[in-house]
Amino acid sequence: MISVDGTKMPKDFEHRIRELEDKIDQLQLTMDKMDAKLTKHIEFIDKTYEGLKSPIKTVTGFFGKKYD
Image (cartoon, rainbow, N blue to C red; front, side, top):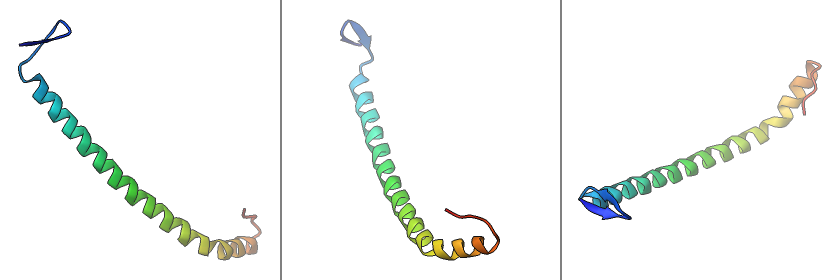
């Protein structure tokens, strides 16, 4: 056992901390990749929807519904 600020810790405490830090780093990388994919997808949807706005307004106007 080692002591940190008067608290006894297991001998492999530092190793465990490094493992946790590595896992956190991996999670951050995964989150960054997912964020990039989601952002790209949202941009695609926005571009696709932009081209459909006018036809949607026309059709909904035809049926007497107001579209904003």
